[in-house]
Length: 155
Image 1 (cartoon, rainbow, N blue to C red):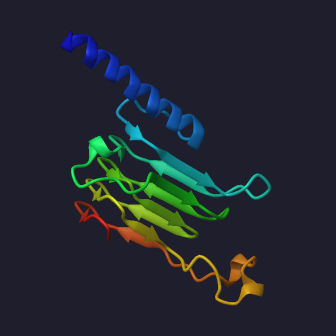
Image 2 (cartoon, one colour):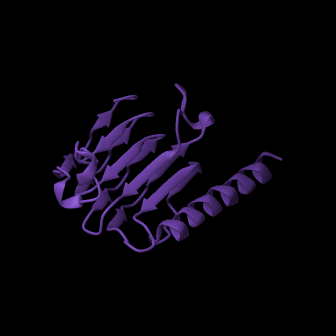
Image 3 (cartoon, rainbow, N blue to C red):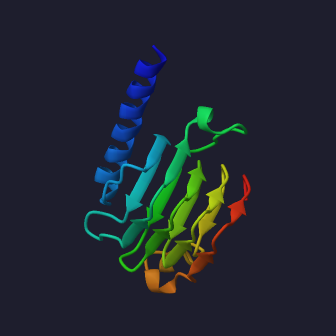
């Protein structure tokens, strides 16, 4: 019975990972482990966005069962404008967090990102209401997270 359950879980995990890859437009890799909800937002229909690049052994934990301190949100990878990109290295694990890129977010190898983190490379919009549709007025700088980093929950 245990062997059967492991096979069924493996098929579910593979299906979740395949679905994630198809929806986000990245190449499927069998060593991806996607559990729970992960949302990939890539611009709008009339304004396609930049790139999402993910290395080997990516783990996305979006379920309560996959994190001992809890998950307060799904994983959100938001690539907002045509020039923006999120680059995730090898052996990276993310639990229920948001990465919001208007410029560039680069995550190194062997990185863990705890539940509830928000990583954003911009202030998202100008303070003046009438300037909010002009992405040239958004202040945005690249973010680089090096190798072997652990970003704790709710950071």
